[in-house]
Image (cartoon, rainbow, N blue to C red; front, side, top):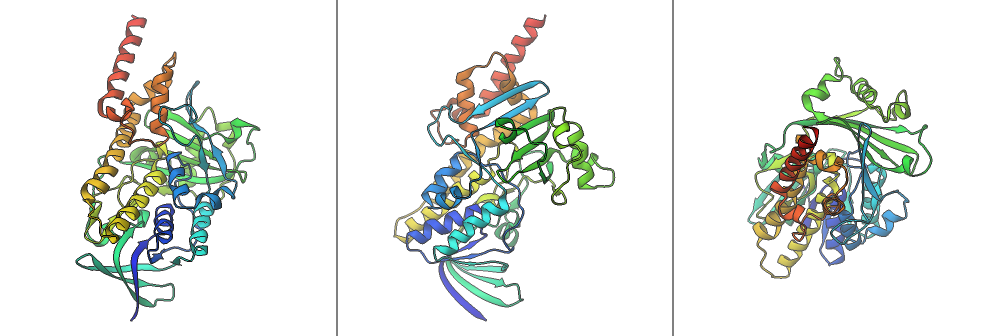
Length: 416
C-alpha cells in the first residue's frame, strides 16, 4: 500500500481546514489535506460574523476572498411582524472588525481551497478516510481515493475539520447528544428577481414567524439569495405531509408577511436541502494526537451565524497549539483548547437557548431601545464572545433571562 509521511493531516478543506493548513504551512509544517467531496459543493453556513475576519487575515487568506467581491455584511436585521431590530457591527462594545461577508459557500470554500493549493499545500479532493489508528500521538490513516485506491498517511497530529462528516467522532465513538432542543432547517437558493434596490435588497434578515420558527434571507452579490426556514423538528416536518422539502419551504414562505411578495413563486435553484436535528456535540474535543475543530466537534444553531467563526477559531487555535508542541513547548490542551473554546461556545449556547425561549427577542424588540445594552449584545453577535469586560459575555448565563423578566414585569405594570 502506498504510504505518505507528514507532520499534520487535516481532514476537510472547508474554512477550518484551510485556515489550519495555511497557518501551519507558513510556519514550515508539512501538511496533507484530504477532502471527501469534490469542490465546489453546496453547504450551509453562508452568513459570517466579524470575528472570522481575524482568522482569515492571520491565515493569509483574506486577500483571495476579498477579491471575490462577496456581499458585505455590515450587521443583521431581525423582524417580528411590524417590529424591526437592526444591529450595526460598527457600533458594538468590543473593538474588532465592523463587517464581514454573505457568501455562496460553494464559491467561498473553493476560493480558499484553491489558494491553499496555490501556496503549495498538498490538498487531495474526493479522498475518504476509511480508518485511523493511533500509536501514542502518531497516527496511521487509511484513505481511499475516487478510483478506489488505498494509501496510508502517517502523521504526528490530525486536525479533524470534516464538518458534518464528523470523521473522528464517528470512528472513535466521540459523539454525544447536544444540550440544545432538536431543531431542523430547510434551505435553498433563489434567483432574487424581485430584489429591491439599495440596502433593503442586500441586508441579511431573520424573519420571526413564531417564537421558535424563523426564516433566513441572505442576499449574495451574484444576484441570488439563500432562503431557509428553521424551527423545532416537529414543526419543520409538519410543513409538508409528503416530506417534500420544496413544498415545505414554499409553505414557510407563505407564513412571512414581510417576504411573501418578494419570494412567493420564485424558482429554486436547487432542490431544497434539509438538515434534521442539526445540533451536535462531542465527549471531548481533543485526544493524544488529534483535535476536533468546527462542526466535527460542536454545532449549535444557525440563528446567529456562529458556525464558521467557531470553525476557524478552533482551526486556528489547534494549529497554533500543535506548532507550540512541535517547538518543544508544553501545551495544556484541556485548558488552552477545550477550556478556551468551551467558554465561547457556552456564551453562544445561552444566546441560542434564550432566543428560543423568547427572552432574547424581548430584549431585541423592547422600545425605547437601550443603546448600551444593544452595543454589548452586538459585540456577542459579532463573535467577540471571549471579551469578559462585556457583562453580556461574563454574566451570559443569567443576565438575558433576568433583564427580559424585568422588562416583561414593567410592561405588565404599564398595562394594569
